[in-house]
Length: 257
Image (cartoon, rainbow, N blue to C red; front, side):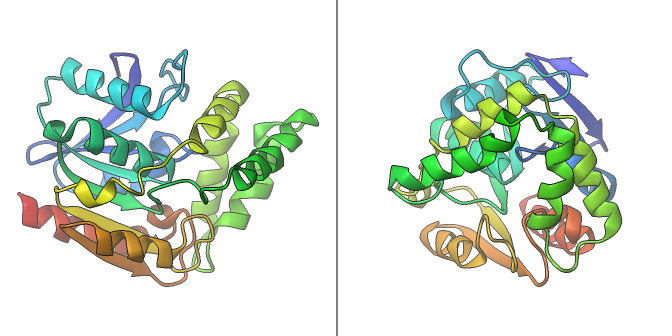
């Protein structure tokens, strides 16, 4: 289905509406274990430029948050519970900062409140490293086979790795480049303490991209936050540990209903 430029899938009915926001190499399949295993009215979104969703002319975090709110308006959803992984969690944070009245709660999976450090040299090095293979002629499918195994933890099963690899292989190169350029601009480290909605943070103990210790510190700064760490999981926590992730989410959402 498609509304307000965003392509999405649905699952379940009744209860609280939850929108799932995937990471840079993902799509709606990235949250399939949650769409299959949780109760409520569930929406798995393809972010702008993914699937059949329209790539924004100017890809910025404020514009991504605005596109999400336009989608909520199209579906006449007054308030939504946002669950995001990696950059999807960053978009959830941005939306909570800019449109607090539209967000009922946040789940942040493998997500940090800012990209890297305050020094631009890290951002420049990151972009150069990520874009160099594409500049050299590699495809996203080729990158996926190399990249996905590097970001998962020791508990990741072959089917989870295959699913994530398949999702990343379908990302258009133009989208991947634009989203990477957007990613390095994110900085809400000074604003998360103002987010008052219930928040659940889920970290992978072996995640090198959104380190568990960083997420634990985030939770300490947020006024109504709980923190969970899953042993053996890497960056794709909800795919690597679907049963544990769903248990945490079911308990969290159960308290909100």
